Length: 260
Image (cartoon, rainbow, N blue to C red; front, side, top):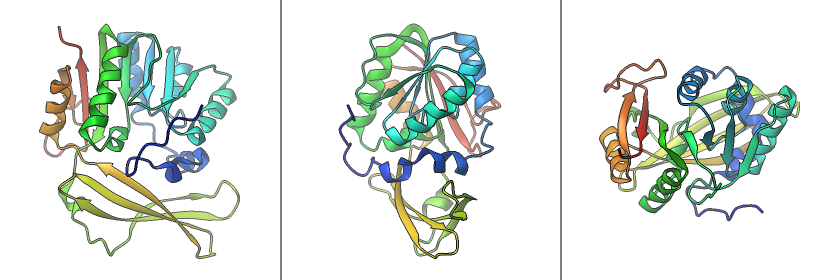
């Protein structure tokens, strides 16, 4: 059964409807895979990836022998994930589900929430519901890892009337080059950055618009939210090389554990 469509602005179904576009847009993005593979090998399986998308991380971990489950809200992304795994001859447990309300009836030694996906949780109720599901599914000695960008004020306050480049890639349907540009309006009261992506295919000039509304988590706030929801922070890195988190770090990568 398809999960109930969550209320706007979290829902980005138009953006994630076709996993082929997602994969072509992110070709070459592999720097986080060795990090998660190292964590999985250290902790052992089973592993759960929240918001697994097209299996960009899931499949390489499974290839390395990690027993991993991928959960995602969007069928279009999971369709591509299944195709990716099938192309490698790998069987993976793919779950169509909402990270705020899932029950897999088993526990995991590692649960991770990669590549800014937590930014789709905009309100306290959604964040608390997700973290409650994680606690329920995390083994006593397990670990939970959250990976999100370190906010940049210069991006949040950009001129909303201007378009900024995002990506270019070949259209999977042979229509030419897909060019994505974006603009954004940041709402400081809700801490949601309202982003619009404009897709132009080939030379037709026609554009498709998709919303990407991302909750911004400032460093001390995210730490406090994790602690308030029953986790103990074990480490906080600024990038996938496990360098310490600083003001200049591009990422917030937080590894937490259940209370001792």
